[in-house]
Length: 247
Image (cartoon, rainbow, N blue to C red):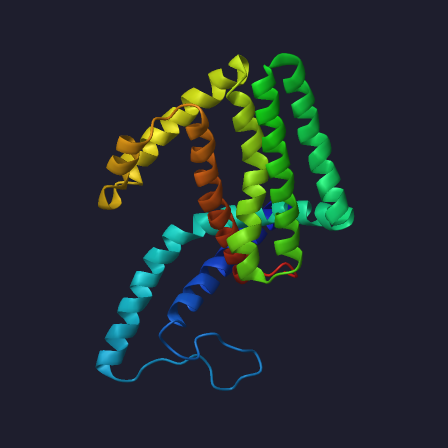
């Protein structure tokens, strides 16, 4: 019995989400699509033949769009869960706590680099940890003292940078890490050049100007961290619009 109820609840939640997405899609061009419980007007529908054809066509396009978009909404729900936990932890720590935690974590990495890497490697990892600490502080400030747009544009990319930068720099000087990071980074770079950055010859420009070695890996992961942060912020925002946290 409990199993059936749980299953029905899940199917009901998915149905609700899909309906809300489709209603939002219809509301982009047609008025009064969201039915309010206290309203006596009901949902608006066109009366003319041309209007009905446009309404049905837009509805069909919306059904396809929702089918493609809903998996990203699900990912947004998961991302919102983890980012909300990080937000609560950051809020409880405060700006000084966030900075101190970053110093402790990346300071530990720098101490390990001091024992195992050359002086150059130690200084590079230390500098990366410093940049990551500043990025973590900026992520906190732009999240707590800005709106949703500021959070998406700045807080999420800063957060991704704070996570990505020190390990990538450490991989430049660690044979163990480089055997994992560099081959996977090269595979990812080739895929991005062949599939994503072909617009207006961006891939050819990057291949002609840069070799994926040394600090180019750092630049690559910084370049990846920013759009990943934007994408993550967009998906969390979409989840919030789709189903507010109170629900």
